[in-house]
Structures are given as C-alpha cells and as structure tokens.
Length: 65
View 1 (cartoon, rainbow, N blue to C red):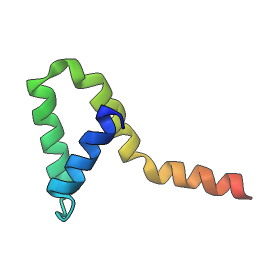
View 2 (view 1 turned 180 degrees about the horizontal axis):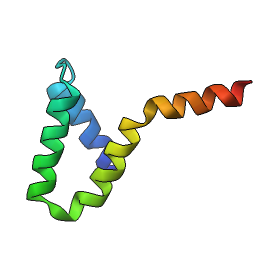
View 3 (view 1 turned 135 degrees about the horizontal axis):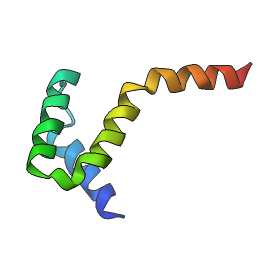
C-alpha cells in the first residue's frame, strides 16, 4: 500500500464517522496552505476538482447519450 493509501486509511479510521461542512473543510485547507505554502498548487487543484464535481457528472451524462 502506498503512503497515500495509508493516510486515507488513517483518515477513515480517525474521522470516518464525522460529518463536516464544506465551509469547515475549506477553512482547514486554507490553514494547511498557510502553514505549508509549497502545497498551494496541489490543494488548489484538489479544491477546484471538488468544486466542479457536478460539472464532471454533467459531462458524464453527455457521454451516455
């Protein structure tokens, strides 16, 4: 298992039962980037992808036609 896979397992084990808001997640990501500016680009890509998931679903619907 990759280090990323292990990190995902730890996240699920520690926080998997919690429900969080998108606003809370955005704040935590901002705090992380403030502490770790080298990660700004990957976090930006992740947040953009998350924000546009509905758009991706719409594109998948077009492919099904």
